[in-house]
Length: 210
Image (tube, rainbow, N blue to C red; front, side):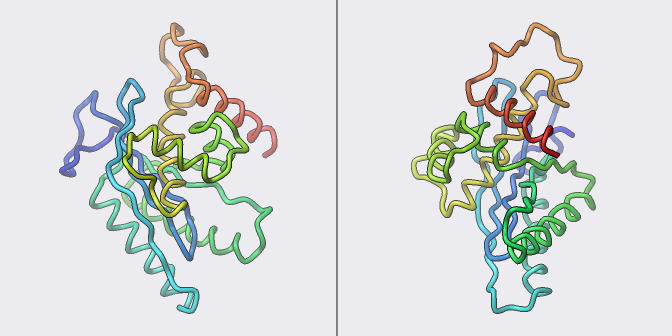
């Protein structure tokens, strides 16, 4: 699906790909929208965090996340939603909260027919920093640099959401990736940035571990 113009209208062919990245969580859910040009130049469109109080009932917290997601989808009309994949090594309560938030987000996108992509933390870190083991501070620094921001996006959940959006868009530029099928073979691995090559390695490793 193509990206959308800033006024919410359908984008023309050749327009930027608009990606909504989501770092799911019950307490803090990061949301970040970026436009990606064909030359891989990325521009910030919107970023924020939806917070819920742990003292609230679960249904109220999930409703708050659902309402915010609906609002962001209506406001920015992304072409795709990129969500962080849930990992089982987190403690059980954290996994449950992230999984519940993820389900709400995926369902909201599905209602609109918007594709959803899941990416592991190591894939995302590798895409934006060149290392699948980078810490949150390194991710935030690189997101700030890539998007040419005057100040780093805060809190870290917001930066992580933007990193997810960037990782997904750059994945599409990588030879051998699903969205690159059918492209000319003139584009080789040497056309990738070091971070994109590291992303490919992280993705391959994640697939072998599934």
